[in-house]
Image (cartoon, rainbow, N blue to C red):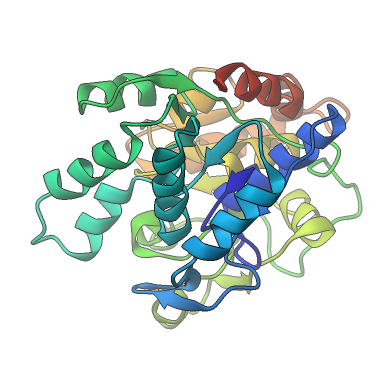
Length: 333
């Protein structure tokens, strides 16, 4: 059973990761059931209105667990469903695992600077402490969380669906080229101002939605905000662009980095955790503390890349979801 407060219609890395995990586990012969906010009474999360928190979900969640009798329970998020599942597992003596996807303390600080960052870290240590494994995406994040006092931290890497995300020869967008793309939540912690304020040739494109969208559209009228996309529409949006720009400094991984690379786009980003873990010094992008320099360097890569065998694509092909799913299974109690 996968318990997650993050679920459709949200479009983000956590939702995509949980969806693909379930699909791949099913292909391996496992029976998977999700406990999500879907079909429950929910309220919008403060500052994240598109995230719906289930209210008093414990009773129905207990019934689900009793009926399904899962051999493993994975709690993906620290919301109301995650809290209820944690409590039920502890009460019944059911071993469970958790995963850490979102820099919750840093997000809190970005929205409420007056709150000491030690408080959300204390909550997270309490939440994850009883888990048989707390899974994180990269070795550097594992080391960081251990330095914050977390235990039983194990690696669960991320992969990419290279069949969905691919170069598409006839994919186009009706904007002047080069086209610079950013995909993700349009929110303060994503540092989109750093990208949108750059003086770059061509067109800046944002795919995604979030609380900062209206303000950024007004502030940057020349940028193109296409809203959320999924499925083939998302694949074609990636493939129609030239460079993927990732201005975030707080993401723990950045699944969109692999999606962009699989689509044939080189990446421009800061040299921070996430881009460093995913790309490192591979010649498929440019990581620089000067984001404009990174963008122009990535554009050079795009212009040199052969359309038949783009090096970003080849890099992504080596990072399949199946290996990640098997790693997830090895972390279960």
